[in-house]
Image (tube, rainbow, N blue to C red; front, side, top):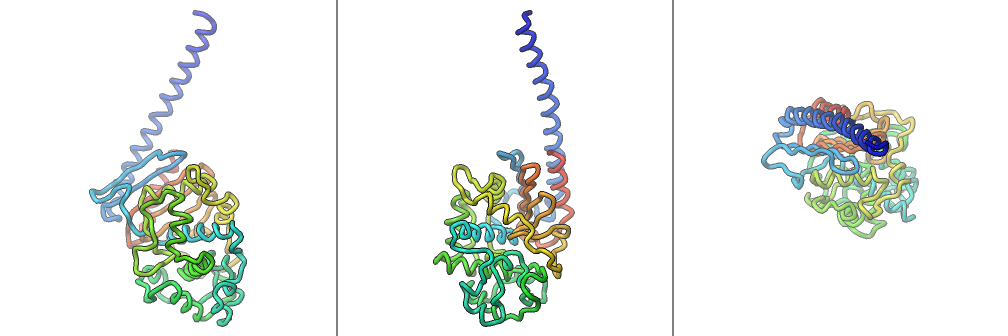
Length: 333
């Protein structure tokens, strides 16, 4: 055997050993993840989808006869993540500045001692506006207002309890105020703006903010497993959805940066304890996420470069089940 032949043979053997060692590891991890997903389906009413994306879909498991990649469900608070992304498209065009006062676009906010409230304050949930007393469950009650304009005008009349930026209180006020500002700036309804600037460019054909009677930028979105993972992949791909530029890398960095500063936490949902808030998303040590009691858990690990989507519908805080799936996926990387 020639020296060249021996070299080729040795290279092939080494490659084979690597592949043999690699494949069982992934297979074993997939099996473990399958088991965890099966154990977690009950809290989601037997309907659950789990997807892992890293350059492409690496894993997907659909549980339940009525569940598929195209099953449309409410995404709850993950809607605020989409709303922040939509706002950043206007910032990139110079039509909006995060530090613009809300009253520049909604004059009513200059007449109720809220003239210092900015777009950034709203997206970061540090408005200082008196919150509803019912807490997080209030966020998912049916809106009593016929449209976003009337709701946002009513919010303007609520008392300012703290100066903007002083306290963090997770609620729907900020995102919905920004949603109305975008309607003014974009001269279209919020749902149409979202479709034109985020959903359609990302290929999210079965996602919408139009299914409810009223538009709710904070928690009124509906999507599917196949669609939501595309949004997460776009963020990991530095704003690219295929060949389309949806957001700039700078906008994504701004969204994923701590925005609450030294604000005192007055209300943080239990399932997000340990995280801090950016613009429309929670962040911690390279993790960017937007968990919701209604629409599952959308999760990005920017350090390891993968996205995880746990997609289902539950009305209870089942953090232990989310954590079990997240931990199983982390072990794969």
